[in-house]
Image (cartoon, rainbow, N blue to C red):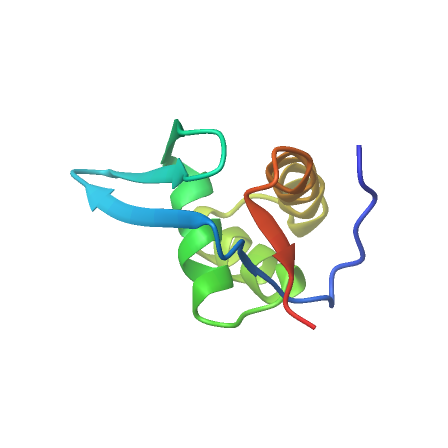
Length: 94
């Protein structure tokens, strides 16, 4: 699994389409033709990345909104973003 720093900005890969459906985001990887459903904090993370926020900024926002410790939120966010990168759904926004 990829190890992230919390300042690099990420975006959906160019081959991934995104659509809000109810309380979820549906992501379609057009290369593999697989759909991925993302809800809850995952949806907040995707929206934040699409707004150009860094993982650290998103972690701070989620921690503030939920009252969770920012270290725990950052660790969860790191795992989520790393898994999305491993699936080819996110890429570095450099």
